[in-house]
Length: 260
Image 1 (cartoon, rainbow, N blue to C red):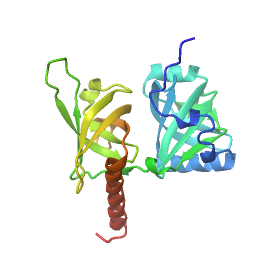
Image 2 (image 1 turned 180 degrees about the horizontal axis):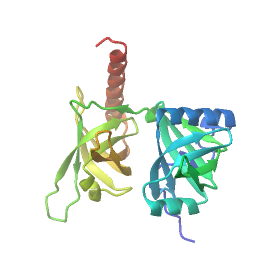
Image 3 (image 1 turned 90 degrees about the vertical axis):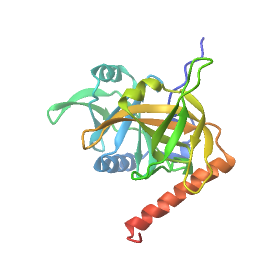
Image 4 (image 1 turned 135 degrees about the vertical axis):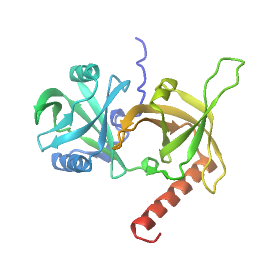
């Protein structure tokens, strides 16, 4: 028997017994978390086929009996999802990583349009570990990360300078043009990336691509978000990132309190 392919994303919900202390089992608690996510308009990434396929959606309705999710934009992916026994949904709610599984998903009509419906998940993972605390990086003076791109042997590698969207102690997200999506694949690894942080020494690190999807903002502009995780990052470089995250959060709270 051949060894199964590994997931292209880290789905903690599928790791038996590892995160039991973070699981909710009460239908009342689970529906409360999902209702909060729906009110906040949180985007939901839905994975299947061992994490190799996914689509973006949002919660349309949550009751103690079940949930309704918006239909995806790709009909082929929608059809595959309906044929799948179990879907894994992941999102961020109040900066806490949330994952839950849906079984027996079916096609319904919700307010005159197609949607996915399922029973309320039997359990829900709320992962509040420190490495998943993610903060948005400045928009006016964006940070940039330099990625050396693969090149044929003997040729000089080009370097992409990409803007950061957010950062955590476990990874970061980069913004690219839609045309650049062809340059990236799931699980692709980039070594010798450079991340300059304000008031810190430039960090050299390796990144693995975890997810990639297109986004259209309210102005109608399209771009793509590349989610990356650090590989074997520890010690001083990790401490630098954690210090920077702390400063960003302190500045955010100061602005909210009118101290800046």
